[in-house]
Length: 69
Image (cartoon, rainbow, N blue to C red; front, side):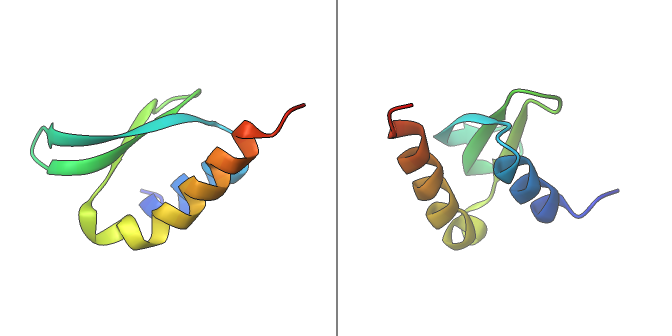
């Protein structure tokens, strides 16, 4: 099994992230940030104790997505 968070961050850097949402009732986890990717596995949950790592990454991703091409 690969290092979960390192691989997710690599996928974000490679441009595979298509969106994300905050979910209150994800199965067996509860509250999480659910990341959506263009390639399998298509969704990955991030638990609340990891939000500190992901919020700056997601903020940069949103800023890049807003830039006109």
